[in-house]
Amino acid sequence: AQTVTQSQPEMSVQEAETVTLSCTYDTSESDYYLFWYKQPPSRQMILVIRQEAYKQQNATENRFSVNFQKAAKSFSLKISDSQLGDAAMYFCAYRLPGGADGLTFGKGTHLIIQP
Amino acid sequence: DTGVSQNPRHKITKRGQNVTFRCDPISEHNRLYWYRQTLGQGPEFLTYFQNEAQLEKSRLLSDRFSAERPKGSFSTLEIQRTEQGDSAMYLCASSHRGSDEKLFFGSGTQLSVL
Image 1: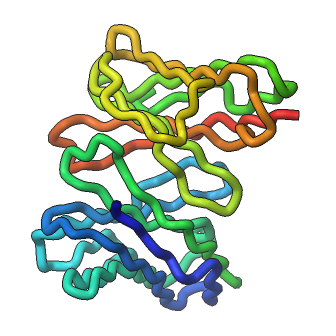
Image 2 (image 1 turned 180 degrees about the vertical axis):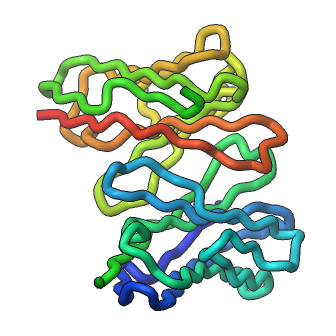
Image 3 (image 1 turned 45 degrees about the vertical axis):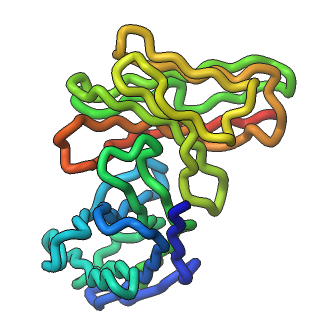
C-alpha cells in the first residue's frame, strides 16, 4: 500500500519569506501523480500544485514550486514571498492514474505566517 | 455554481440516530469520492463511484455506512446507528476522466455525534 509522510506537523515563516514543506512517499509504482492541497480554516481542500512522476521538470504555479526527487521519493513544496493568506494546513497526496481510491494523503503540515 | 456542493455543512445528532449527507459534484464529472477527515489527520478514502456504479469501498466503511449515486449525478452517504467515533468531517470530491487526475473537493459536512 502507498503511504505519504509529512514529518513537519507545524511550520512558521515570516511574511514575504520563503518556506519549504517536506513530503516523502512510498510506492513500488513508476507512474503516479503527486499533489499539494491547501486546507484553510474553511476546511475546503484547494489544489495548489500537481506533479506527474514521469516528468522530470518540477511543477511551478506562481509563488508555489515543488522539488520532486523520484529516486528519493521526495516531493517538497516551496512557497516564495509568503502571504498571510497562505496560512493553512497543507497536505501532500499521491495518486495512481485512474486510481479507484482517489488520493492517499499525508497527515498535513500546519503553516503559520507571522506578520 | 461550478463547484462541488455538500449539504448540510454541519450536523449534530444523538448517538444511535441515522444521518444522511448529500453531495452534488461538478456537473460533467463522472467520478465521485467520499472521504472522512478527523481532527489533525489527512482525509481518508471511504468509497468511489464511477457514474452510478460503486466501484471501490474502503475497509473503513462499516456495515452501518451506505452510499448511493442514483443516475450518476448526486450522491448520498448514510450512517445508521451513529456512534461517537463517527464524529468527523465528511468530504466529497469529484473528477472527470482526462482531468489530469485532479480531484475537486466540496466544503464538507461536519458531523458531531453526542
